[in-house]
Image (cartoon, each protein chain N blue to C red):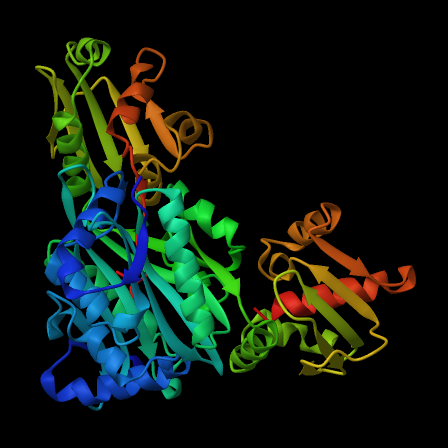
Length: 267
Length: 268
């Protein structure tokens, strides 16, 4: 019965405030404010309210997705009309009710009606919707990588921990049990930054800019390789090629491996 | 030799910046072609970008590169994102990137992020030089749903038909051939007629049939996998292959020859 109560329609002017409230609720933590949402979801050339699909229950927006109409370059003198789906947001109180699939189905039919040849979307591999999309016939075409340069390592780690703590279905929370067993003082000496200490104490993480004495593990070198490598084998390769150097008693090698996993799970 | 100057952006630079962008991206597909109006929206109107975060490299008064860096706060950290970065040579690119990183340092940024087209060797060389690390995880996957296979096929054929052809290609196109392409429930017949390929949106009597799923169609024709690999990994099923080995050459002709780069929606 409940399924029939949801209505799938395109945005109307009176829904706009609700739309921006929902976007702020779902994406506000990413550093974007209402000004940014207006720029992205309202002022993009060619974007009209008809390009935003809302799923409503009793006039309350439960979920939303926007389709950006784009004419992309495809050959030396050729363009192709596509839609890029993004800003998929479901209100926390309506999650787990199949809302996402409702607006995605409408996104497909709307793209067809509007003459697009392809519908693109982006997804981060660690999110739940990645697995849902693949299972529902929306396929991965290729991967686009970011490049990162860390300028302040302690603050970078602090921010990563903070952002991961707010997500419940990530590697970080899966690792939590393991975290609680780790009790280490890690000295990190990045090749392009100031040394700092990371203290893992029974699930708690403390980052100290001041270097403490007698660390149990010392990690030196290209620390970003440790964090962003494709897999733990990438980390081992960095150790073998001495891009990362590890100072730890042989008896604690297994614990060092757990620490590596813990650090990687923060991203 | 004139010295390259890296300076702050001025409004008069827009036309030249758009020209630099289009030159650098001439062998890349997937992005929205830039016009001064679109560039204004994407960069000057972007809430995270200020005029002080746009740097231009010039020689003799001519713009030869530029970089756009924006700032935002995220989960308690100061993050800088390089939204656009184009340069005609490596030395210019390095000068611009160093200036952008300096700008990030001046604003107490914790980390700098950027994306770039996979084939842009100039920019990727500079990123490595300034110790940027490729983030393998978390990775951003570009997901796709094929809405209109016929439209894509027709566009690829149009691109091919307009391409200059050498003698061997002209010879290949002399012999009339027909290939039926089946993508899920969509059929199209590709006919080689009078030195051109023609798409007919119906099922015709053919020499060979290619059968593939929408995602495999995209991967093959967007040049992400070779026709031979697609055949041996069963991404494409070919009926009538033994008498028609030319099918691999045929698929190769229609494949996109340029790298595909679709910037994330925040960048467009």
